[in-house]
Image 1 (cartoon, rainbow, N blue to C red):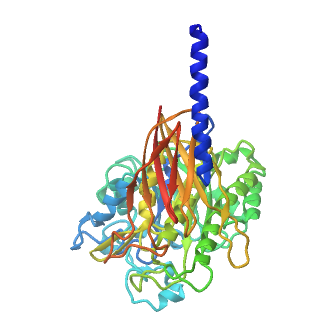
Image 2: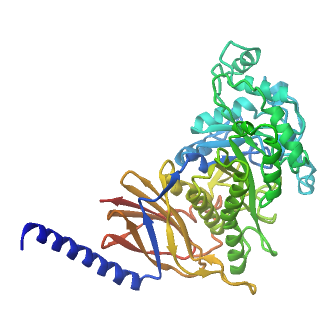
Length: 539
């Protein structure tokens, strides 16, 4: 046998052996995940892992802000424990001051000496639940936390600020002045001098600006055509002071394709070049609890119902992307999902004044994993996303009250998924059946879902097992490379209702998990009701 034939024989033998191993693994496994490393979707922007902080309930006061004179450890009035945890997840961007609060906010109320700042009714004081809450900063806004304090918070955690302007009640001139206050170089304008007098000589260089919020509702009850005119007026000739301003439009409520189509049509009716003024189109979607259960009191049917609602995000992105493309055929404008998460019935708040301050369980953690995986898989379409909200509200990563602080299961998902940031999203094919048949409905929820990203020779795979009861033995095959080594980390609990509290802060935490290679890939058992990250080193 000559050398050429010998090499071909050895190559064929190796491939055949690997194929036999893979075939045996496939027969033993209940599911298969295939990852072709040569089929990238796009770069996963770190901004997909953004956050949202509104002046609502306990998000700002007793959440982020405790004040410089507080006994709670703080950095210039900002809760130290929060800063430390936000650094751990590499938080890229934070949206502020709302939300609906932004639709009644005058940014000038939050600058200057704190003792001289005006006190005003908070937007959310009209909520019937808040009317029964005790008086305090959650009902009567003291404006202690304003533009300077927020931008310092962003600097402390290493995130970019994303500011939402009040389009319903302020003027375009007010918006220009806010940009001036934030971005003008030191000593160049009167507003820059005011910023310096407040302790921040250097400009904040704010790039992201939301032009209104939910303009179809609390942001003014506009029609799409009316809002398009306001967007054009607010964004015309805004001085950026050397900062490339990124304007984000107030997009649809969930599946309202009509709002998207009519806005894009009116924006461009005279000049398609105006698409260049629109960086992102904001989509809002919450998966809400149905039935009588609350955040921690739910059935297995409730579990599947809510996880199915979370996966609707995938179709919303596809549908709105298609509607945007009817006008924006080059897809210059990207989606920005700047409010998302689970919204439960009231009843699990840690403080009576914390509106929508729900507890977060393993169910919420899986919703976070499913949603972040969807964003990763649409890295070519979604430029930013902001979970609602950061602390003490809705799908929060943290709960805090006075000197007590705890990370929810959602935090641990964000910490695991931070490894995806900056990687190349890869098309990931899951061969697995559906589960979740309940209430007479057919099974429609994939048993496994996830995403993968490539970072040079390191591949990150995240997988959510949606089954409330069953582990899934799964073959993972990487097409185009062999797996040299692998490590894993998992977030799981024996009870789907498990959650962290001040008394038991470590009830739900991530743990290392062993990963066994099989041929050129691996076979892994994903526990029931879990989120897993596998880090694969490729040969």
